[in-house]
Image 1 (cartoon, rainbow, N blue to C red):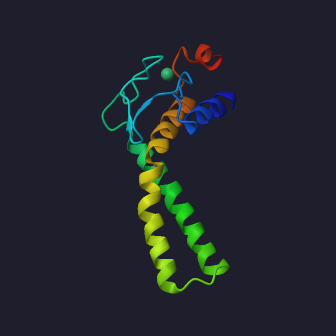
Image 2 (image 1 turned 60 degrees about the horizontal axis):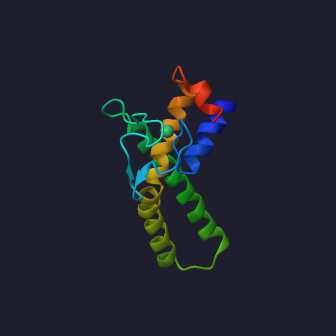
Length: 124
Ligand SMILES: [Zn+2]
């Protein structure tokens, strides 16, 4: 549980899930191939980040549905306004959440398959 909280906390702060270092992105969307501090290769096999798409789409679309339900039940917006907000959220949320989904996928992978030297990295 400690490893899970540590890696996900690092990922949510856009830091390296392995060592906690910042600066793992080139811009908003591009994850560097390796961590600048611990030099861990993030995409260690082709298709590695496929699971991050599932996290990204699942989380953002669930959040979009909840927001649209709130728009329907809790506001006096017209149907057209709700449709515009709903479609806008459905398109924008996955794009904005994409970099975080990459790191959350790495954190999930570490939690399930910890590298052999990970225990000393968690203490940093
Ligand atoms: Zn690192």
